[in-house]
Length: 408
Image: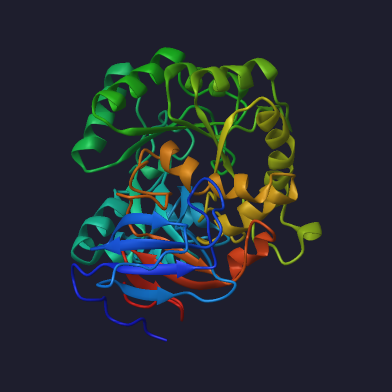
């Protein structure tokens, strides 16, 4: 059904749920108060809302939580069998259409914030800016633009090939001037680029430090793609907010190293693990998907044991098992590997907001946060399959999906 029109501007709305998760913990039955797309309060005592508030009862069994945050996606990649060829050759209009379709799919799944870590020709920035008058119709788009890489390096076909610290600083400034929220750098090689070796560094420690310092001076979020242990270590020491993948690729194997994990923990760097492959039969998963599942199973336990800060991203768009709502499957994968339900939800809400540099606005049910909300029909902490039972999605207080999405 089509969601109803937004409520009268400025009116206080009280949304009551059988259970709420506030981005940190489950708080039982609760009421979230919203005005003009912003949360103004959260109440867990069974008290009557103000008499001037419009009350929306979500009903028995309802579970209300912040909209999910995908810390690593690729919206202009089409999730097809040869996504690299497509993103390299597609005309600008097709790239923009891909971004809009992918963002809409994510939003329907309850993903209300997407950090895009690699587009071509600033396609995500263009779509975001064009949608500004009705920005609630898309997730919050945190764009990185073309990722910085070495000439002919990993994902060079996106246009971010750069050599030397001075040129890297200039490239960071260019992304800032173009309206990017994040700077992404390919600290190691990667698996989808012919001739690239994930187990090798691409930049020196000084070059990575130059990128991080310039980005921080401009107030930008930072992300470093790193499979190789040496690249992970360099990125953590350089001060990147997140290190992506963290696979500890050594030759053709994943070999976590305690000293590198300790460096991540000491630096407070988030390990942004790419998880979530949609396969009808996990036992017969395509080779790349099977490899990524093996990677998650290998690196997640030692990272957790050491107390590393962990968030989840989908790497959506890079292939057929990576549709742009794959994050939900990634959360379920984390639980399958022993993460408790509340901790798994934190990885895609409160913790993810901090990792992506949008804490205070996203990932929490708290005063001052945007009213980006996900309504489920059951408790995902007890069974993460509930994440697939979406009853309603709100973006800035606007109902954008689901039969339980009434005007706020």
